[in-house]
Length: 278
Length: 259
Image 1 (cartoon, chains in turn brown, purple):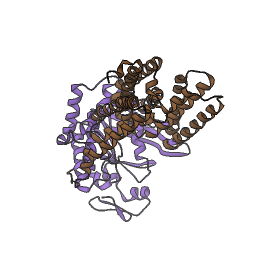
Image 2: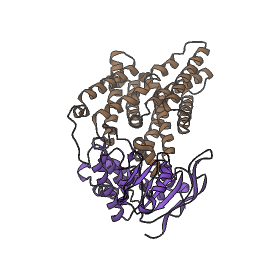
Image 3: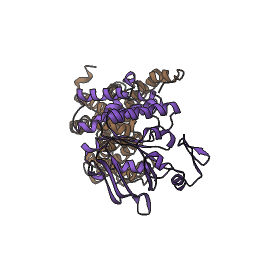
Image 4: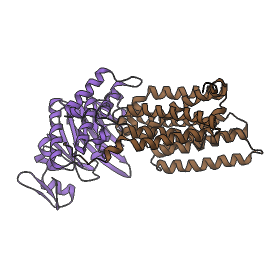
């Protein structure tokens, strides 16, 4: 393992996987608890459409991905807030239409672009120093926001109406949360890919959900599994010469099924129901 | 009882083509326990949400702590404890009783700050007042419906409120537990000198606990001591069915008795 770490690209990949592991699994806790799973999938495809347009027009891919990602979550949030349509319908429309846009932009390109397809399937081993700087910069900004607004995000993940009623600016914080989800997806796009980034947000948090009965515990366990999956997936990718995104996500999925199998909640639900005194 | 803490002055809510509450005029005194009753869709929940500043009036005014509700600042909102109509919390939701109650402190703590030792102590005391000291670290979803309601009452108490708004707190709970819960609310009302507004369908259950009743059906039909409000004439007007009021003040509406 030490030999592997002699390579500069491996050092960058290790740093990127730790950062992405922490970032995705921390934001994933709120995604799972608030039932925003589908928003991640839709945003990932929208961000990829942004990247495709950037390549077509020779613009900065990250900038365009941020723009497309944020526009998608904000419009979705507004539509849901106005009660015009349900979240799954709204994001379903964005999911498919932005993917159609991506296909269209790729169709306009004269030649095959390997770098663009890197954003679709992800390649953590090809993270450049510039990519790493972007991942670190945006990633730390998202984590700082999660740290600063942790207690409020916790409250709106559990009960947004109550949070609003008790005087917390719940609406603004909901928009902050969906913006953080979009930024997390964009940050992870190059390393994990648009197809799989959403799994990195969802699976470690869903694994933690199986193993704990407190929100604090869920955050800690989710981050542990997120980092474990991304770092071990990255090493597996190098050692076995397999795609990194797939290795990371399949490892995370394996941890998830192990958690389901050994979940204390599963054991509790098999016990006879105890009548509790009120 | 002293000054009015809440004032509705000809306040209407909803949309111009669909009014939920029409020209409500009502004063609620500090320290009063008032039951809000009325049939389904009569605007009971709207009345509570208006007090929280979540629904602005389309005409008239509603003021709490002498401030227009829709302009309430965070520090005022924190003085109103609210228990919304709730479904049971998912059995697996990872939240302990203590974590849920501590959330009641968040608006008072403010943004960018962590709960202090004093906030933890206030949350613990609220849990104790709600009679849940043994459940501190239990997962919320493992508690019965009645216990979960106690947790939410504790969360409201952790805000250290002056006014407590309760929206159908006894729904979906068995009869003995409903009574225990109402006794707890009454005790808190007396010991903490809270102003309590409790929305319910259950007229007969609430009568022994309240100072006054407010009967709604889009408009305010009556407000006063239970004996004055629960008359055959007024109730028939509101419920539009045959109503019987027994000698002991027990209300029976149509073929359904409110007990």
